Amino acid sequence: MAKKVKGKQPVVDGTEVSETPATPSKPEKQVEKTKQESSTSGEEVPHKVNTANLAELKSACDECVKEYFGRPTAFSQSHTHEDIRLALGWSSTIIAFASAYYGYRTEFQESKFWVTVGVALYMLLSGASALYSQYIEKNVIFVGKRRTVASRISTERLTVSSTVPPSPTAPKSYVDSILAAVSLAPTPEPASAADAFPSYKLSVSYVHSSNNGKSLIHHADATLEKPFAAWFDEEGSLWKEGFEKALEELLSGIVG
Image (cartoon, rainbow, N blue to C red; front, side):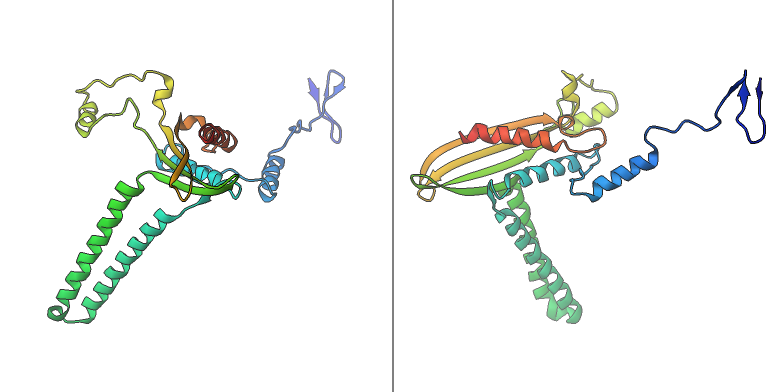
């Protein structure tokens, strides 16, 4: 039996027992304070993405690729593709706005010719932008070059493309997806556990030339493909150190 006396600790079998609860080794407030201190310090806080969103996963990897290859000590990034798309996009937007404003301020019979011309130009520029992205830019996320001076002046050009290959277990067509949805077509089992995860694929092309590209010194292509699960943890944080290490090995393998 425990006897409790006012102003004293309870006694159990003649031994005093403390009522003060045991304090945790690291309180929650201290953990939160540590997180805040690390975020306010110079340390880089990893950016988290939604692991169920392939677009966010791919975008995070693309940004890391551009950041790594675009370092001052690496390659000078070319923004030609972005500039062309921006020029086409802004031009079509300005023409659409000008046509709408002119049609609003002018009588219909007087404005219909120029409004029609504006609509035609808008459709033409929008189609050109879509065709450029589809057939010229394609999946390119980085284009860079650098000059080296040894026995002669030469130029190294690096082109990087990224894709998310379809899963082997995904339906190959719209009809297959409908049949699978109504259970009329069997769903194949993945060959391995890795097949169940979407992959991120990089295609790298390296060209080393001189004399303004007229003399080819070296050319090589390489690919890197791994599941997103190899680069992201369960919370959606990118394993940047390991990802950049893989990029370093990929580049060193083709530069020669």
